Image (tube, rainbow, N blue to C red):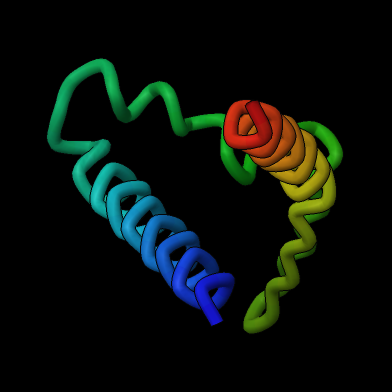
Length: 84
């Protein structure tokens, strides 16, 4: 069962990365220069937003595609590095 130990370490690493990313998003407005790095998230031309008086719907289609491509590249590079 040593393969479960390595899988557990990967899950802990991913969880730690998500926590760090969340803290970075929370503190982005407090530090000058960092807030502008994430200003594009949710405001791309392909994102659909519909607002009425008491109703609003938001579909971040373009943002989802960009984040999917970036995460796919990240995981590909991490997999390539760990296969060496």
